[in-house]
Amino acid sequence: MDIAVCVKRVPLVGSTFILNDDSMSIDTSRIGATLSPHEENAVEAAVRLIEAHGGSITLFSVGSAESLEQLREQLAIGADRAVLIETDGAEVDSQAAAAMLAQAINQDATSFDLILLGSESVDSGGYQTGIRISHALGLPVVTNVKGLSCEQGTATCERAVGTSREVYEVNLPAVITVLDGLNIPRYPSVPGRIKARKKPIDQVTITIPAPTSVRTSLRVPVSTSKGATNLGSGQEAAKALIDVFKQIGVMQ
Amino acid sequence: MILVYADHDRGVVDPLTFQALTFARNIDSDVHAVLIGGASTGLNPISAAAELGEYGAQVVVIADISGYADYAPLAAARVLVERLVATGATTLIAASSPRGNEVLAHVAAITDRPFTADCYRITAGEPHKIVRARWAGNLEEDVDVYSDVLIATVFPHSTQASTHPAPGIIQEITATVSERDLSVQVLKRVGAATGGVTLPEAKVIVSGGRGMGGPEGFGILEEIAGALGGAVGCTRVVTSAGWRPHSEQVGQTGTKVAPDLYLACGISGATQHLAGCKNSKTLIAINSDPDATIMSHADYIIVGDVAQILPLVLQEIHAALSVTHTS
Ligand SMILES: Cc1cc2nc3c(=O)[nH]c(=O)nc-3n(C[C@H](O)[C@H](O)[C@H](O)COP(=O)(O)OP(=O)(O)OC[C@H]3O[C@@H](n4cnc5c(N)ncnc54)[C@H](O)[C@@H]3O)c2cc1C
Ligand SMILES: Nc1ncnc2c1ncn2[C@@H]1O[C@H](COP(=O)(O)O)[C@@H](O)[C@H]1O
Image 1 (cartoon, helix red, strand yellow):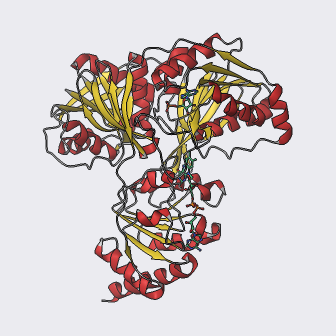
Image 2 (image 1 turned 120 degrees about the vertical axis):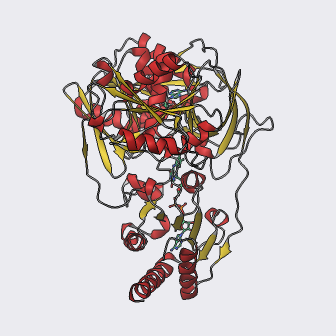
Image 3 (image 1 turned 45 degrees about the vertical axis):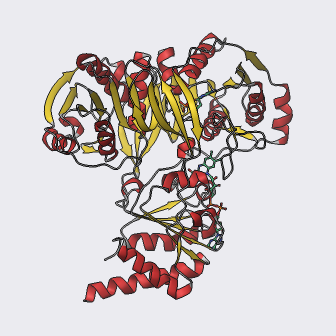
């Protein structure tokens, strides 16, 4: 089976967010970059499916040339080739990114059986790219998937709701968006990294559709540091804790 | 007029919907709620409409779709698209839940409009001025959205649900959708509920991180949660290590919760974890490191080793409960 996976480069933010002086973007000069988390699970799921059924994996990304770093990393994990839809790195909203990805997937020589994405990206939290791609390509879509298997042209998907799981079945070709927890992504091996150097990455350009969402400002929300009350230590702390439980009404 | 997609799971209205109704009311008092699915979904029209009316729904549309058994996102979206046209509503709101985001993203894709998830505030206009969460709430963005009909979801727990009784007049409609629109739907459920409280509904969450030392460390958290009628939560380090199932992960890529009590044990308080628990009414942290980030976000702290403190806590809980029982 031939699988497409849409992945996005995002800043690797530690415990604090530092913004640029114009309050429009994150200062990335001193931090690294990574893939948006659910997408690592999407690539891992694709690699497992190919290991079981044979086939190919193509990565698609809309982003700056710096995204090559993330694409190489995922090629080292087991993807076969990548298509970078290159931009100047300025933010592309989810609606525009979806249109560009759909176009690139559509005009690719491979016709894909499965298109995998993250349910939402960590930076934008748009919750929509996979759904938009499914409409653009006329394919069914299952989202928020945490369990996935494919047999004979059908994908069985599980989605967590409370403590149980909903089961969906969908005929391929289909779009599926996945969540952290679907699997535990592997790390690239040394031979994987060496092979990845020779794997092809096509760099293409697609006109960015006019934006419908335009940022005017970005800020770190005022911290709600509360000046905690220290309950002490040992038995005394345990007793004080019970008093707090009673006071806030979680214990009689 | 504003339409609110009211999600329900087999007849039980998602409590986040009440936050979405409260949010919508602040934009325009003429709020109509839309419930999808007839009796086969387990929906009781009278009681559901009464509940939604309590939170300000003037009208409650109940759409019966033939062939809709439980939940089918695209079919639900088709009904909302039809309702937008039929009513001339200028705004469509839902809670930012997996289903709320999914159904509204379908509506946006079908109608080729923008979709703005995780909103804190909306000032409708041309453009719509929106304040929304980025990075799961670690950043706030002001964004101008250009659309004739605004399609948006409300960041969980950013608006407190408040009642505002309205008539909640039931308007039943029947809808037909294509077989394709029903092709993606819930076929069955597996791993039936364990009987325990689930994270989103728990009033008390006893949560553990790397500091619990290993899977066996969670036994005492289960006991404390059990005694308080709560649920166990954990960090991503814990799920990645396979100590606990991913369904218990709290945070940016886990569940976002807002219990009365969040007891964080051996958790450092990474932004990605706090994104999921910072709206808790009371946050208590137990950590051996007084400078851990979580300590400055907590209401109460205990500096110490969880392996020493937690058994004492459990002992005190048992003592307190037995006193209540015997007196
Ligand atoms: C994109 C992305 C998404 C993420 N999403 C999530 C998410 O959804 N949820 C999440 O939780 N994380 C998430 N993370 C991971 C997050 O950044 C942190 O790595 C994680 O939350 C840390 O978990 P922890 O607190 O258990 O471990 P640590 O950070 O290692 O902290 C352990 C704490 O335990 C304390 N401790 C150790 N021993 C003891 C003891 N004996 N007694 C008391 N205290 C002790 C230490 O002082 C320390 O503070 C995400 C990360 C990324 C990059
Ligand atoms: N610029 C992009 N390049 C490649 N994939 C993307 C891009 N933006 C979004 N995606 C994919 O769409 C998913 C959901 O993103 P969003 O709808 O923006 O929250 C992400 O997890 C990615 O898989």
